[in-house]
Length: 211
Image 1 (cartoon, rainbow, N blue to C red):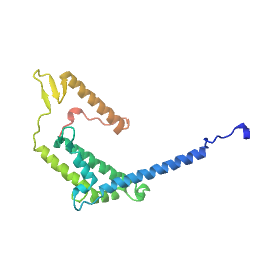
Image 2 (image 1 turned 180 degrees about the vertical axis):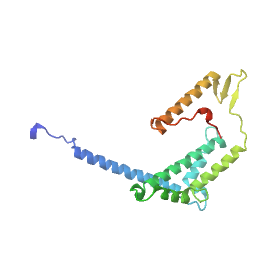
Image 3 (image 1 turned 180 degrees about the horizontal axis):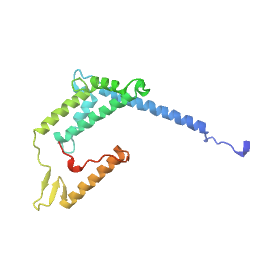
């Protein structure tokens, strides 16, 4: 035993630990690529016969049903689901193009692959899942624009309390809620979107207009 120190069966050298970490990273990289390829294959599925042959379109249809209420989701509450799905597909397309070897090696511009992917798989005039989502969302927007739903917020007779479903708020509580949500939104914006950068341009809230 050299220097009176020996290695146990469970010990490993730095080199062995580094090799093990590299192998783990390679396995995770292959898994990430396999998951990405599977997700992109759903986006690139041709829908020559039935739209519901697509797992994405079928999932969107399932989300239109509210099992707790036993009825269909209101159109105004359903179109955001479609927007989330569409945005997710767009992010997957971006990630897929970023991982193309020629793009990753800066041998070809990213925009060339993005435009090609968009024209073939993401436009609303192609027989693809995203086109179905876009068309359904446009229809939902039109229905919501021409439909007057039952008011979800009601005033109590005292003129100081509003009710939203089973939730009741005094005006003071409402002002506190708005302030809390605004502070939270500003914190998320500064931390997660601006990464804590200094000197970010400010926009007065009174200048914002809801279209």
